[in-house]
Image (tube, rainbow over all chains, first blue to last red; front, side, top):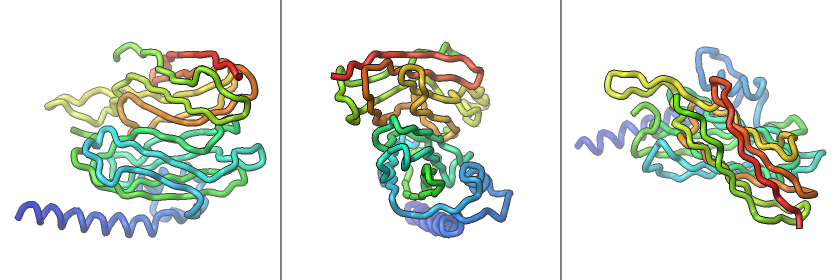
Length: 151
Length: 108
């Protein structure tokens, strides 16, 4: 019975995350939301579009303290067209900011692998800032067996 | 705070001009956010602020760390060189201490 109860909680949370994600990428209205504020700070409040960016995460992380994440952005990495920055956000960690990567044209492929911390089941958001001023966004859901932040 | 140890840096022995090659870095660091408790005690914050990769002194790749970065930060990314160069990795913690590792990469 406890197991099904826990499952229900997860489903509800997922639902909330989904709602949050739909509402999220667009200009932030509530300044009280730390996630929205962190994204607005990184993007200057500009809109991001999906596509041209992939976010690879394991669907289930046994250890929330070491979750591998790879972000790949489709970009020729030329002077005229390259990725300037990739921002990573956690939607349900104690704090939303994970990392910002700054790239130059000496970075041959706009692909970065890192390891992150996740406290509980949640969605991860990657936003890439391109040299033409556009922003690309990808999200991925990760289930976390053992939280990696507080414990 | 423990002493800052130099980052580990893995590079190919030689690379071809203009071709992508893989770079891996790892820093031994607890990345304590100051949010974690051990029993009743709050473990003090001890975080890296940044990791900067340079090619002959010019920054080419940089990580700004947030709380969501795992302990012992590990990164994989791809660089390209037109000519032989020194690749260096410098980490800086929030107390502004730094540690650096450098390796020369010959372009074949």
